[in-house]
Image (tube, rainbow, N blue to C red):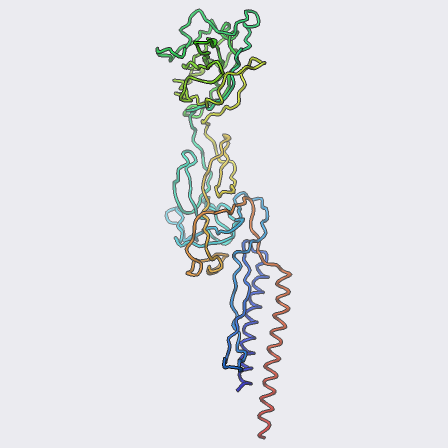
Length: 460
């Protein structure tokens, strides 16, 4: 009876080693497959008999052992939409089921993969080499709001023009501005004959439209210093050159603050001393320590900003009370620290990139960079409990647990893919051991057969 058991055990050994060589051959065949995770083989003994002092080794069972938690090497590519997960996590993908009325339809069943060789198909959807369409959230490039959740689509998008509504500004205004007039008159103050062009901190009258006439521009320029110059944009995306000058109209004393007025050129096509200068409409006041006191809200609105006859609309000049200051400066000039505006002309998509936090960012011809989509990443408590499917995908199982969203410490690497984690040298070593074990099992079978023949020959 024990001889028959030995035969059965040897047969199970042959089956187990055959299963192992099957996994090894699959690993070697997929050593160059993007995102492939090798399958190892584990062996479990099945005891045939367990009585005291008579424990006989039984058959063996071969089982697959996944290596989804083992990272493959990350290799750079020349395709911007290729991406690799550096850490734990899987791309969420779906398969395409067809095109109905010119619209692509998808399976609706999520699958998970480490294969990140995504590139746009003919409709702009990101699909990898295994036919998996990347899932995530698509954003409106103009508003930044989510437009859809599902297959990510990166088409030849156009970014609509956005008018300038705010200018963020930070600078130091010199306590003693070095104007052209101050070199001869020793005065750093602008005191025009027509004071209606000025706005003081306590002025309660409407300030809109206050202007230094073009005829008085030369005197104004001689008694003011250059301010920030920035390009603003209209609702249609037309650029408008906004050139400004600062004029100090009052020095600080024990009972009075220093007051500055900001003006912008009404005509950017002529020299500074030939154009009218429009008052921005706010009196900027500073105490004797050089700290801004008014406007206290950190914002001043330029009503109906109009340059070269083009009306931009109301534009907020936004500043920080700690960055808009009046300190002594030997140069006597304005020192600009921050100058940005939020408008832009219409633009077309030039390029895309993948950020480490999982966003797909588009670079447009107008210089803007905006988020177009966010990549759907899923994590599992037990990644090796996933069920392997075709084309490098996995399905959720009870053993894997439910998918958890987000990178959670992992990062995405753009213009890269994760290579197979198969080690050819290791697979060859396992192949030699498996071959020897298979041969040994055949020897057991032939030996058991000989023993049975000998037993039968006894009764002949």
